[in-house]
Length: 158
Image (cartoon, rainbow, N blue to C red; front, side):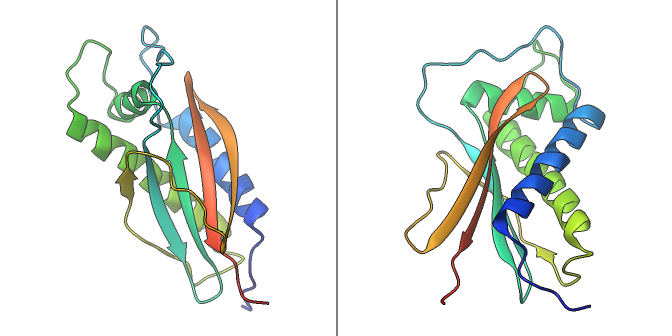
């Protein structure tokens, strides 16, 4: 198999499909808990690298703090009135990202069979792409949760 550089838009399209599938099949949202958009300006998220000798990208999912909490609750199948610590939110969002990245990796394996996953990383604000990076993002809705899917990669020298 001859692996080639996969266009960044294809990563985003595959990421979006994985997120749609996860929301439909694995996340259980409490119907009584639609997250309210807060006044907060922070947008925490979880990120993970997918790497091979030919492709290296970082995928990320970010949302407002109440929406991150709703995603963690949905992953754990918790109701709104059940206790969820801040650590559980970090772990839950990181695990959502881990599952999504695994789905993306599996989908892209036919294009590049040498892909490996890194470990998820939680950050309090979205990662910003620098001058030497390219980035694409898309707004997505996972159940009642509005979030942003992000794909970054360092541009290759011409």
